[in-house]
Amino acid sequence: MPVRRPIDDELQELHALLVEMADLVDEQFSNAMNAVISGNIGDATEVVERDDEVDALELAIDRQCERILALHQPVSRDLRMLIVAIKINTDLERIGDHCKNVAKNAKYLTATPEVFEHTRIAEMADQSRNMLREVQDAFLKRDTLQARRVLAKDRHVDRMHRETFYKLIELAKEDPSMVESVGHVITMSKALERISDHAKNIAEAVVFLMEGIDIRHKQVQESAPAEDGGDARVTNA
Image 1: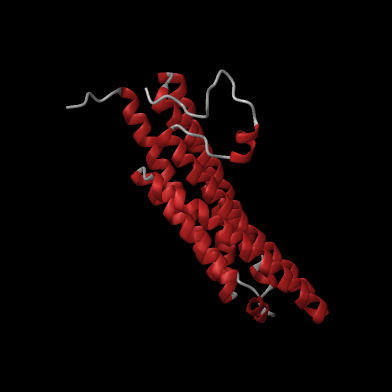
Image 2: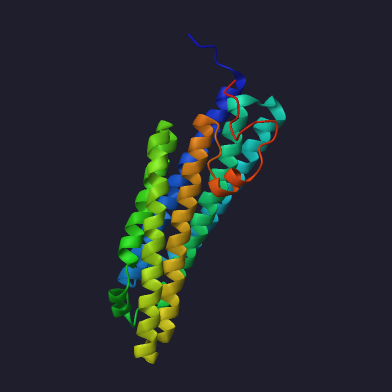
């Protein structure tokens, strides 16, 4: 039977906080999109107000990481878990900010819901939210294959964002009365594209956690000279 270490309880608490934050951010995402599509200003206002809860969890996770570092001076896999927790915490908080910004646009689009007919906003939202849920599942299961599958989906969201942007620009040219609405929907589209980017970042963090390999910015790493013949791997001691 494995011996339970004092740090294990602290790491378990950290893990629980991360899961709680991921669940809250996912709920914010769903509520923000529903508020915009339905034109429900009350629901949009609630999303904006609940962003304080996301911020509070970010601070709680940071404090827990600081506590573990101070009390246990972790090394190896435990240290890697802390590094990953800090990265994921930052990405989740930023996703929360983007959800808040999406919700803020709801009141400007109630008079022109037809603007969405010229976009792929609904598909982008579905894909971005699926990425967020899948990467949360990958983190819970420590599943690097699932995390890597999330990475590929980000490119699809990027393509939909570009397509939506150009279609909206054409709409604004054809109908100048839609310019304000177009501006708000472009802001939403960019927020969804950024949410998918943050989900991708979390997927990269899961790979780092389990394999000790930093797969970010591969083109930069491949062009940089290796130091002491090493690579981006961290020893699994």
